[in-house]
Image (cartoon, helix red, strand yellow):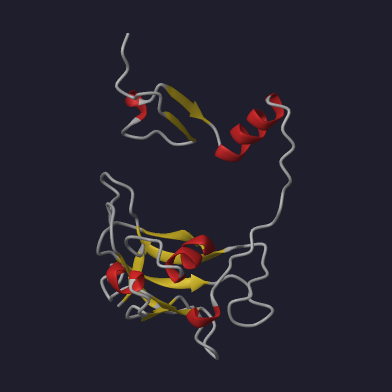
Length: 179
């Protein structure tokens, strides 16, 4: 029997709209599945705590949790052509400090506005994150599709890897922008 999924695997704890297309569907946390796979393959995978690498030219000194990123105010990446020619692309200040007002740029909650309610602990100064919680907390209307969409306020996490990727210009679209 020919499958539409072409060998795709979906691993996660929530159902998705694509589950029926997957050749293999595993309801579990990805970390648990990969640990079991490594064990089965007799692989030793060293563990290391994630430490984001934020380029120094993205750090706004004296303003922790504010970053210069190569995107516009809509969250779209600045012209890649400029970067390929060695020119610095235009940047915006991406303010992720507590109290900063933000707006989602995509997904079911596109356009929803919220506020940053907590930041990672920053014990060594701007850009040098040392924390057990490597994320920002954003308070927004519910972004789950269905009847609760836009209703009650929920707190969502924005991982530090988003900041690292944004500073490097590797995202096509910022997940949220300042308003």
